[in-house]
Length: 295
Ligand SMILES: Cc1cc2nc3c(=O)[nH]c(=O)nc-3n(C[C@H](O)[C@H](O)[C@H](O)COP(=O)(O)OP(=O)(O)OC[C@H]3O[C@@H](n4cnc5c(N)ncnc54)[C@H](O)[C@@H]3O)c2cc1C
Image 1 (cartoon, rainbow, N blue to C red):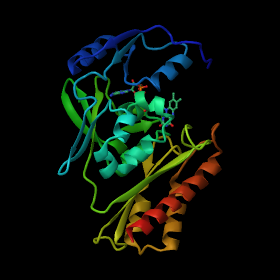
Image 2: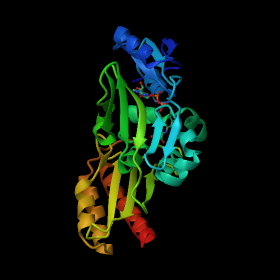
Image 3: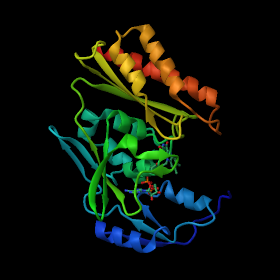
Image 4: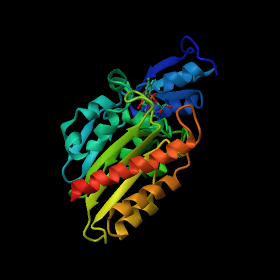
């Protein structure tokens, strides 16, 4: 694939309403792409010999940039909320800090002014930095089509590298985050080739919270990117952690088990073996830190 000096020609259209999107998708599919910040899409178009003849910008549809937090219902973000926008929002910093932490690791500040949360989700990259936080916060995607709205847990949305469960006449409207269990603490640990600005070689998001119903007294959620065809949780590891007393050894075992669930491929960024070991190391680091903070 050759990088070209510019983009192929395309027609730019800006949608004011969902109905305009549906009508144009019906008329021009598959030769049309929805556009948000363009930070993934333009790179792909530049690197391919041909691109879609129409780009439909959906950022301006009412509600797409809205941030709504309700202490009883949780957080809802319009799909076109940018990574800088969400990272600067007080309610998100206070109640869903791993979203801000993750957003701040994406590219650089200028990029994050354009890059949207919805674009990061819909591009369906296995290394998407927002994915682990969406998984541990159990985000629910609100998808809209001419038939109306439907919701989908984020873990069911990615079906392969660059592939999603979106139907041809559908787009991502918003992302909902339920309220977190009381006392929850979380973090996103990202390893790139450089300290900042690079894609994740491995990224691990972790959430821990007190749960008196669990023999361990704590429950953990673990979300991992970059080491399988799609970002993923490790439910067996999470259950094992909840059902046994937490010790140094049990955390070590959980990290080893998380490593076993990973299936990275060798690429320009790292060998598969290195990625596997880093899944273990980051998972262990995160588990230990969260466990210590919950004591
Ligand atoms: C220099 C550089 C550095 C980067 N660094 C990182 C990084 O560190 N971590 C990381 O995770 N990513 C990184 N990226 C990738 C990219 O910036 C992010 O994935 C970004 O969040 C994509 O959002 P966007 O709004 O630009 O999406 P766009 O490029 O506009 O869209 C991406 C794809 O999703 C589809 N789409 C967008 N919105 C919707 C919707 N609402 N409904 C249906 N389909 C939709 C589009 O049609 C397109 O196929 C980097 C990119 C660049 C160029």
